[in-house]
Length: 139
Image 1 (cartoon, rainbow, N blue to C red):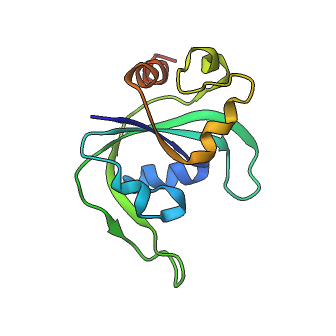
Image 2: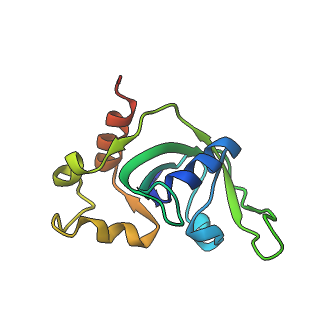
Image 3: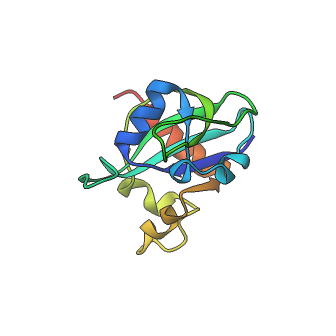
């Protein structure tokens, strides 16, 4: 089992949550090939919307990959993204700022946002548990 962070606007996270799927890299297949059944994906949303959204800087969802299948869907004539089925957990949105100093995957605490430019990236179990426990805590 591995743990991942997927950088996606909150608007797009909600679409994936409703459809119970994970999409990465604007629908590219290659990032999804790194995921395996039972891997966890935590979503980090820098903004509320992809196009012109407000700054958010929060972890917004947690999903567990259901199987090994990657499939393609047709959203429009020129947009056919690849997806993986996922089960989303009930959790709350949490801001990243209080966790920055404790997250091991963020090496440069002053330029912490740089890591998220990679889209989908693996994190260690310590960081997953830290974020996951905060998201699962009672409100």
